[in-house]
Image (cartoon, rainbow, N blue to C red):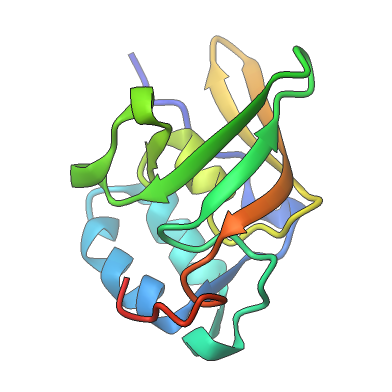
Length: 136
C-alpha cells in the first residue's frame, strides 16, 4: 500500500518561513513529498510572512467542497497530531497540502485509489507570525 501524497507543487506558489523550513528539514530525508515542498518553496523571514499564509501551528478554517462541511484544523508537528482534536500533522497528505498556501486557495492531495482530496482554505483563525509568536 502506498502513502497518499500531495499533488505536484506546480499548481500554486508556496511560501514558508525560514524558521519552519529549518525545523522541517530534519524530517525531509525520509519524506520525499516534504523534501520537494521544502526545495521548491519561496522562503521569507518570519516577520515578513503574509498574514493569510498557512504556517506551522496555524489554525485554519477549511471547507470540504463536496460536502460543504466546515472544519477548523491546526497544522502541527507529528508528535502533536491528534485528528479528533483537529490537529493535523504536517507530514500527512492533508498537512503537506495546506502548508504554505494562502487563504482563498485550494489544498489538493492524492487520497488513494485515484481519488483527489481537496479543501478550500476559507480563513486563518491564528497564524503564529501574525500574532508575533515567532518561537512556535
